[in-house]
Image 1 (cartoon, one colour):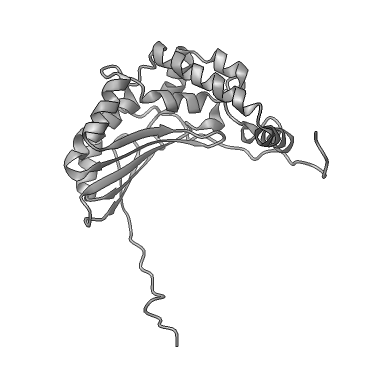
Image 2 (tube, rainbow, N blue to C red; image 1 turned 180 degrees about the horizontal axis):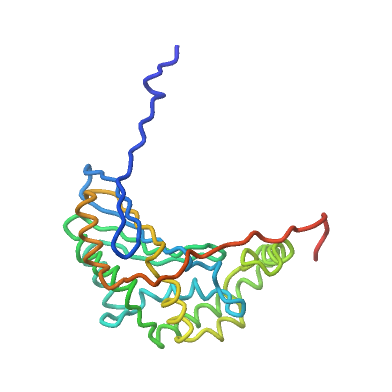
Length: 245
């Protein structure tokens, strides 16, 4: 006989609230372990919104945000996270609509970790030194990509299937990595990392009231931009079956 008890699933429910800057806060309490995880998701800051002549700009922006702020160097950020046994990272994948600032910390270290994450989110300085080092690594990676038949296949497939649609992007190119400048990174960050349609997900040893107060305080400098919610369009029809070399 089948026990109906083991088939009964009760999924936990989030508690939700809106912050004053327009971001939507979702909290899932779990006090079994003294730690907190969070994600700040910006709709409109992913690779889908790369300028046509600068593929990979969103990913490059995200990759360099934690390499220095107005008050912290890359080394200071890394050392602080190591000392607190915490993580903070920024990601923005090719073709994605969103960029994400993620972090985790022990409960007693959550406040300073959130302050550090807010500094990375709001005040990236995009140091020229770090941009130069990133480009050196990117050039080497691009050379390796172009010698990989699997990558060339995926690149060709994306162009054939999606044409000029953002879904066809495979990230940085040899041309775009040379054209990306500090000004381009700063402009993309300013225009796209806005709170108006952001979602903040928090789970762990924290209540909704605590999370709301902490994020309101840490992100008090993150104000509404008034931008409408970014839109997306479907790629064109791929047409009849064909072979592309």
